[in-house]
Length: 136
Image 1: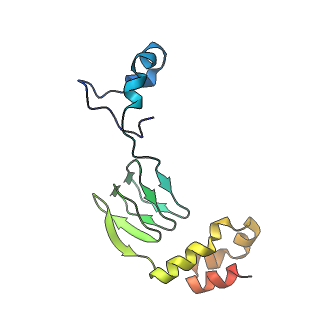
Image 2: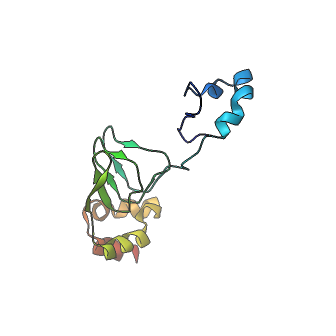
């Protein structure tokens, strides 16, 4: 409904609508009028560090790393490391061409048998090696 936002128009910011019943009936229009930042989307093979906070409406790309304690307020590109408050890019994990190749390979969509057969390459291989395995 509110994408984790609260109305700030009135005296209270409490979302009384969540209790349902008569309170919901009396306040649903207020709850529906709260702006939403949209869905929060976390890609595949993302590492989110301890006590990181991801705000509503943020998209985190495949292969990204969110540092411990980071406060993510904007989208994180694939295979990017972010940290801080607000989170900023710390580094790119791979050059752009390698990121594009990894996004095409989508190893996380492979059948479990293929993942099992190539676990070592997935965990410790290079983009070149994973691309070779993908073409098998």
